[in-house]
Image (cartoon, rainbow, N blue to C red; front, side, top):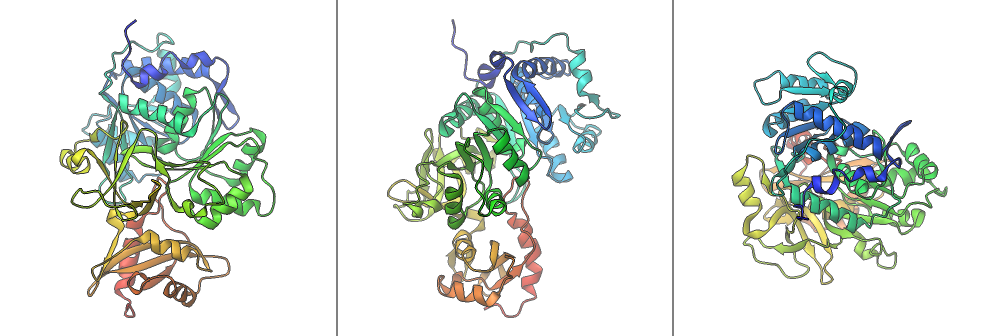
Length: 520
């Protein structure tokens, strides 16, 4: 028998049904088995094919966490089409840009995103069909109608090229215009297999996903389905619901950003957690406080694993393993781990030369699931993939043991008076200061120094005292690294992907700092 090319269709289509009546997706009170998911996928694939969707055609998936998202995933995979995931937390202008730029021909939307889909379909663009997964609406065809009209449960045959696009992931736009990151069928298939290997997923996994499926959680769900795992979906993170899931549903795996871990710890206090079934809490997307990580390890045990990745190399560029979370070696807790199994990492100077161990440079990556290109951006692609490396835009260093330490985004590094200041270094110092619950540091234009260091702080319950913070920084940081302005805020703005939105902070802070006369 001829060997099939490595594609998503080869991994999934015709394979999920083997798990039979095992639960596939649990959302609220509804449970869907793998057999039913496979049947609905086949019918939806036939419906999409009747709209002209085939290999290489883009389909926008516009909904929050629900079973229909994963069914749509599988139908798109079966057709060899290109998934364009759209996060429901994006602004209307961002959604309009994604739909136009991607060339999506069909959009599958829930009630919250249906207006944006219908608006795009009404313009002079490629989007011609909108499927609504909720109640019927003018200009859209209903999900139930599409499935009912299909002439069978099996997806149509499709010849899928391993080098054809499989997904366009749009970046969060924190450093400028959104970019569509294109991954091929082969690259994404290898990436999902890497997820299974890096996490160590077993055959009895129960995965709880509360972060948006259009982002990292979508890949985690697909990896779990490769193993026949049960995917528990929540629309959002709610600490009490998470604790209920852990005890009632015997969750083995969940993904969190550090803030979610903090909320769990705060909610539990001195109470023990009923989480004996947990094998893995995967976390990432933002730095974690060492003190909080120690508390989490004490509360939940050795179940933590950190990832570092980006849309251009999803989720696993590096991994800080469960074993690396060793309370006897807390100095490694500020690392994002060592290179993932299939990835090579180099820390490069601006001229492309490797830097020595312990010296900062740009983190550059090579491996089989690095992006193919940016959609419609050949010049940006050439710049980012130059020299055979994906240039991540992150500044970091690697120690003698191969552990990578993130210092800053290249575009977030502050240059003040000709000196480089890494925001992460200042944030780590301030995070340990009494009275500060959260902090984000940005650089703002200054007439004398070029840029000034500014810190936005979320005060702890006891209140924030700028004099305490100033003294704390004076004892720890060089003068040019110390914040010249503190701006207390109730919350830090985040992107739809859970990262601190420093563009938004600069927009808020610029007029504030311009009015300050005590910058020194």
